[in-house]
Image 1 (cartoon, rainbow, N blue to C red):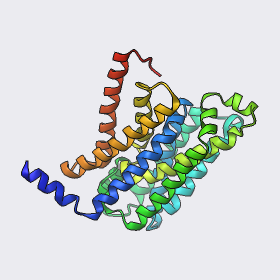
Image 2: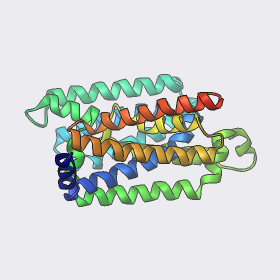
Image 3: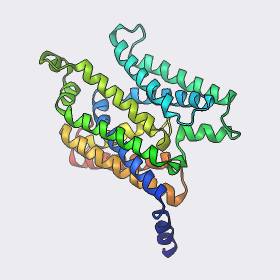
Image 4: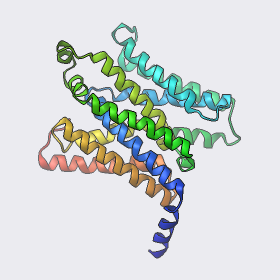
Length: 284
């Protein structure tokens, strides 16, 4: 036990640990805030599709030798989010089919590029770290943290400022339009914010696990809470707590950061299902 606490103290004396926790908490916070809206509007599959787009764009950035892959991944992912939303009813290929095609296509192109033009000699490690996350979050620089803090502040302020309108379009978009709310504009804002969160989360959990940060906390909170506000607050608490716990356990146990966080979310979700069933809450 003494050895455990000594190891714990050693890790938490390092700046990299605090940087990882700051970034992890901020990403979890942003993803949970907008995750509730996505789940209630049945748009959670968009997060999964955009995460694969982010993977494809990051592999392109790695192949062309960009030192900061977010410079390419962020605008491409945001653009795809806008195109998915704007195409809407005018698209010949509808809804989940369009997202599925985009998702699989981006994943295939990304894998093919990284296979043909590997950025390093360790091809398997490159693919696994991009898809499932790695300990690269522990190598975050001060610039990375500053960028994450700036974008996270924008995400949180956007949610707070437009809370009432986001609430309105979440539950009754047609009524919101009838009362003069520009639903398309707020749907667009939500899509762009989610795209930003997904790119930020790539280093934390990898492209294949990002949707878990968006979906699990929201679904967990819906099992035990009844109102939109209470669900959002509880989802935020769950997401942030699981992110902190997952990062700490990953550092101490040497497990991959992304899967560890997702396992923590899964355990909490299971507990919430049991609590909801015991209290008589209906499944959302």
